[in-house]
Length: 262
Image (cartoon, rainbow, N blue to C red; front, side, top):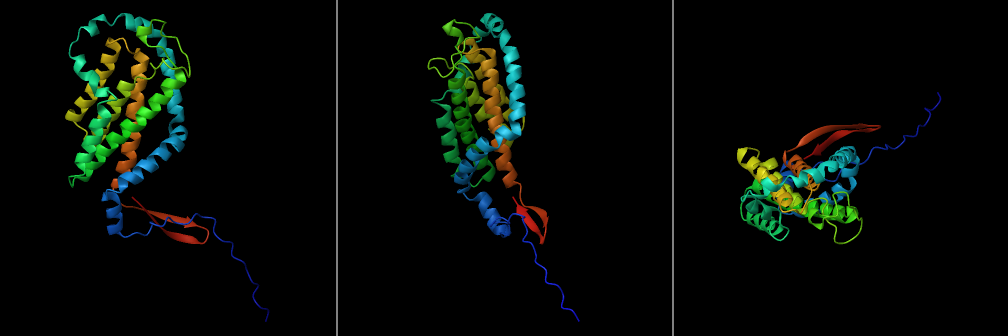
């Protein structure tokens, strides 16, 4: 009888499973609670913001930008009606919450203190708050230089822009960015009335900058958006890793297995 025809099997084009896909539960737990996770997060998050945000949130950011451009026509009118706001003495206490000389140090100190505890959730929240301040500030400083908007006290109008020129750094508000990046991180980890009040304090920071004639309305709105969005993205990434093990079937040509994600 005729010999069976030899057949050639085409290698699967499916990507190989990650090296840690078959890690034991104990190894996965150690990965999610080891203090080394913060170094890993810092590197991975920076790359994720550069690579992933434009593709995932680009349309949303474009819509927000279009809305701010439309709203900016009212900046001058709103600035002229801020006299009642300048009489609110309590705003002087909320402005420092966005200070670049105070909040980065506060967030770093809180994170360092959290490492002395065994509370993983507290550690993650403190690190996320610190990292949010760091990355959101970098984003805002880049936008400041790229847009070159004049501040209200410079009295050249709300529509004066001098891109890539020093001395014009109104958009977005750095204080507002920092305050929202820090406060909202705690809200995402500990949602409730107490942390919601922290977000309200960040709103007070935004109002204080307008009352001090340092920023237009759209400056502080943009700062709040950058700070909150950065904090949201980072909190979601970190919390998703800490939610535990997820089992997914991996099917492909000549491949059958399980993918473990955490």
